[in-house]
Every structure is written in structure tokens, then in C-alpha cells.
Image (cartoon, rainbow, N blue to C red; front, side):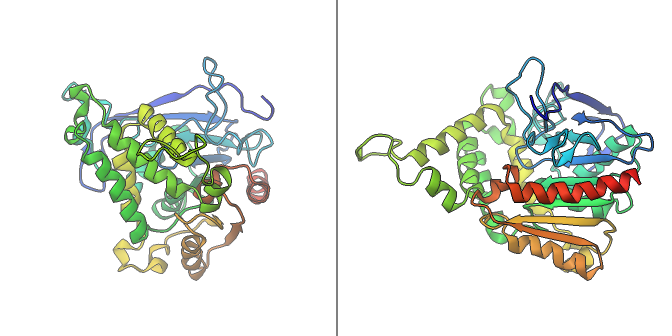
Length: 377
């Protein structure tokens, strides 16, 4: 496969040192699933951490030997000669704590009970994720990342890295994200969670023991979320008012192509993603706010940052609009940080950060080429 990192292997790191969550809960031991691409240089200065979005995971690039069609979710961005160039950088992708792709989460077996954690798994925050990621960096002996990069919820993690460990990250690339959610975004998340919480098969989060999955709730949550990831223009271009058949059926079954698409996406997601993980991830989005301990003042919230920043937004992203990205840029400039900002014209909505867009890729490539020069200087 051209410009691909090729066959990759997922790896697992076990941590026996207890992790205290921001909520006060403690996890005595846990595992993180991760993948790496490229080669770590002698002084370990060329490492990049990729933080994933809500439904993401550690499989960022390449493919598995026994699953050639299972391509990493950011394979168009990461690889030899690509914007995140693995000829120059050592790239780490991981599945967040609380996830459902190998890292310890609600569906994992609690060693103290012999049953899945379920509802007992601690509420996790962006701050908790960054703490666990720092421990993984320690395993590699990485004292400072050349860059931490993420889109959407991953961008929030990248921002938190600059605040929790200001001396351990030289560059932050925050893409299609926000410094904190608006009331509207919190509302969307709450409706999605309630679809799961009110599903009769949810059983208070302990559905594993009942041998069922809250499929209906998770399906509805994904359908709602997917609408917010697309722009009106993108939906109009792809589906418009096209019908599956040539006439109206005058009923509640699927008639429009957009309905068919959303139900397909909902069914596919519900077949592989864990409902408890979805709940945790959306609450982590809600809780993130660097200004929370500073009376809502983002200037104070970002005062600890020492990194240089690239902030990218997309014109039709209404879930995390360009205005939200500018709310990141302003306090960074106030604190005299070096900030580059790009607003990319795209009709793909929030999903634009996953798409191969020439202007977007050129911006990423140019910025990271400069980071690479710093590493090799």
C-alpha cells in the first residue's frame, strides 16, 4: 500500500501503580492498548502523540496482517511522506482509559470481583487521560513530545497536555475542537446519553451480566451524534431528498436515503462500541474546561501553557465552529504564546478533520516540517 506504514501490531502496557482520578476514585491497576509507527531517535526527541476523538482508538495507521481491510482511522494523515511523516517522527496512538478497544474500561474484568466493571468504572476526565498518557510516555523514556496532536475530543487532550505538562510538549496541534463545550453541545450529549440510560437493556450499566446490549439506545445516540458531525451542505450533496423507492409509502419505515444512512451508521456503531464507554467519553467532553478553576477566565486557564500551537477549524463545522477555535487562539495570544491559526473551507462539517483536504493537509505538512527541522537541528 503506497505511503502506508504497512502491517502494524497493537501492543498492551500494564500499569500497577494506582491512578487517582480527578473524581477521587482510584484504579489500582490498568492496561493501555497502543500502536507505534516510525522509529524513536537516539535522544527520544522526535515522538508525536496522537489523541483520539470520541469513538476513536489506538489503530491510527496501517493495517493488521490478518485484517488487511482494517485500515487505521487516520491512515491518510500518518505515514511515510504524509503530513505526519513517519520517516521523521515516532508516532504513538493509544486507546484511552475507559475505552472499549483493549484499554481497561467498563467492559473489562475487574480483578477484585471477577466480573466486568460496568457501572463501577470511575468517571473519567480529559485530565485523567493525559495523566495515563504521561505514564505511557515514561515507559518509552520520552521526556518531551515534539508534538501532541488531536481532533475534536482529541484536540482537548492535546490542549490539556500543554497545561498539565507544559515542559513535556513543544507543539500542540488542536484540530476542530474547543476550549470547553457550549450549552448546546452539552445538550446534544445529554440527549444521546439519555437514549442509552433509558434503554430497558441498559440495566444501570451492568448489562454485561444480563447477556444483553442496550442496542436501541446506543443506536439512537450514534444517529444523533452523526447528524452533528455532518454539515447541511454535505447531507444535501450526498442525499438531498432522495427516496429509496420512487414513491411515498405513507408510514414510519425508512423512505429517504438519509434515513437509511443514519440507521446503517447507528446499527454499525452499536455492533462494536460499548455503551458505557460512550457515556464516559461524552461526560469527559462536558467536563473539560481549563477555565473552571479560574472563574471562567480562559486567559488564566491557559497561562500555564509553554508550547507553540497550531489551531485548525473548518468553515462548516457547527459542532465545533471556527468561533470555538478562536476562543482557544485568543487566550494563547494573551499569554504571548506562538500560535498559528488556519480556517479551512470545507463542506464536510465536523468530520472534515478526518478527510483528505489539500489545504488542510498542506497546513499540517508545512507546520510539521518545521517541527521536524527543530528535532534534527
